[in-house]
Each structure stands twice: as structure tokens, then as C-alpha cells.
Length: 409
Image: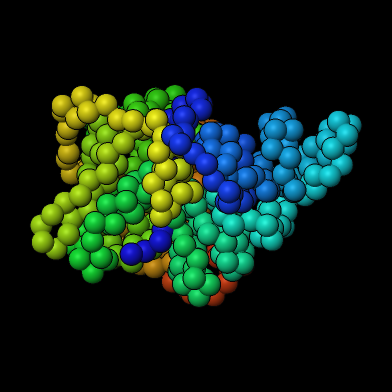
């Protein structure tokens, strides 16, 4: 079986049941001040006998990073920029904590991910910013809990090849892929006929297609189910987020795009389904709390008792329907990119990030997002990327092309 971006999390502490361990799993958390990072640290707090924080990579929130240092005392912490690192270093020194090494940038995140004491790396830095550190961790033999879609979308071929070469487990934290991983334990990979990734349908599931051109950023940021960051919320509204998940699933589970289906499931109680060749379908159902897939990945192959229970009354009504690709062209573009190969996937992710930012800034309309992406894909050549650096170069080229298209150049 294969060993395999932000959602509502409860901040409450999980109550462990009969926990008593002598060996702790030592963690590096990339993206420690984000929602996945907070949830991972919540699990560490709930299971102190199981997990120890060794290193952290934060973003630009110096105050949050400082508080995490005071609580967890990591060996090393990295910030996004040199300026933020210097601010954190000063605050720690003034508080008398000279023992915590403070680094910055991609190099700093790589040190965090490859620290010799670390057993398990939670990869949750948003975007391609976490790609180099995640790849380095794989090459260093660390088990990866993957919460970063962009790593597999932009560099899936390289990531999977490195994981196989170094015998590294890639355990999905994203709820849909985590659900597939759980369901796949019911059979062997060659017994899988197809998988379904469930989608809430976003805020515009029932919006008339004629109204899409006039959707505002404020409307698109109102997700019916999840509370997430701005880009992923817009990606959910366009269904591009589900498109990224299709590409990710193809890489993680070694399946062609035709065997990775999307079904719209507004209740969001079934997180994914796996159909086997004999006709059996296994569905994974759980609370909509990201701590559960994180805990699953951290504890794999064990099942850790917790109080994250599901109310069966929520299963009284379940809807499933096929997504309308004409109304959500971003999902269609993702399938096309998955079939076209790595260069197209790099361009898809890069163009989407630029287009979403332009939409939020009022520079293009809602449907300008898929139009921009499609134009970038049309101009993308199908070159092969043999290294992470080549992936990053292709990513920057696609971003610049997207900016030129938006500017009308």
C-alpha cells in the first residue's frame, strides 16, 4: 500500500486514552504558525508521551513564533525573512533564551526539516516555499506528513521518485487524501478500481452560471463549510483546490486521472471513497477537525485512542452529485494538466496563485481566474524538470507569464 490545505480546527485539547509511552516521535513542523501547525502542536500538547517538538519553521508572525519558542523550546526555528528572524532572535535573547538557533528563508527551513534529531516532518508551508525543505527532508530519510498540495502538484515526479529511492513514507494530512489512505488499507493497490475525492461544492454550487462573472471577492471568501486562508478559499470557490487534489492523488496513489473522480458532497461528512475491483466501496467518515488526519499520520500505522468522535445523526442525509465542469473550468484545467505532465502542473499552480491574487485585488473578475490559467497553459512548453531548482525556475516563468496576461501584455 502506498505510504502516503486548511480547514476548520477546534483549538481544544484532545483527551488521550491510556497513554503511556517511553519512546517519543521527534517532530519538525514546517509552517508552525499556520492552522495545520497550530493543530499539530495541539496534538503534541495532548500526547506529550508520544511527540516531542525538535524544530519549527514559521512565517512572518514573529509574536506567534516567539510564544511557540517559549512553550516548546525547539533546537532551531526558521522565519520567512532575515528581518523577521532578527526580530525573533532579539526577543529570545532579551528573554534569556540564547540556546534556540534562529534561521531564515528556504535554507533555514531546510535545516529545520533535516535536523538530525527529527524523525517526522510535518510539511505545511503554503505554496512552493516549502518545496526545497520537504524534498531535502525526504532525501535525509525523514517520514513526511504532507499538508502542502503544491509539493506534489509542482514537483510530484521528483518527490515520489525521491521517496521511493530513500524508502520514505509520504503520509497525507490533507483530509481527502488521508481518507483515501485509510480506506485503501482495506485492500491492495492493484485491487483499487477508482477513488472519489469529495468536494463541498463551495459557495457557488447552486449559483446560476450567468452570475459567475459578477462574483465579488467578499462573496467568494464565504465558504459554507470550512474556515481557511484566502487563496485556498478562492480555490475552493473555483474548485481549483479539488483539481490540485486530483493531481496530488494521482501522484500519491499511482493512479491515472481517469481513476480519480470528484463528487460534490455538500455535507462534507464523507471525506473520500475507494472502490475496489469486486464492487466494494469503502468510505472514510469522521469529524471535520484537521487534528484527526494529523493524528492519523503522526501515529501511523497505529490508531491512537482520542475523543474525536463522530455524531452518526449527521449521516441522516447525504447528497452526492457530479461536478459541472462547464461552470467550474478550473477543475477541467486541472485534469488536463494532470494528463499533460509536470510542466503543465507547475504552470497550473503558479498561474492560479497569481490569478487569485489579482482577483482579490480587483484586477480581474472571478472568471478571469480560469481564463488566465488557460492562457498560461496554452503557452507552456512540455519540458522536463530534473531538479527542484528547475521546478522553481519553471514556476517563476509561469508566474511572470500570468502577470503579463493579466496586464494585457
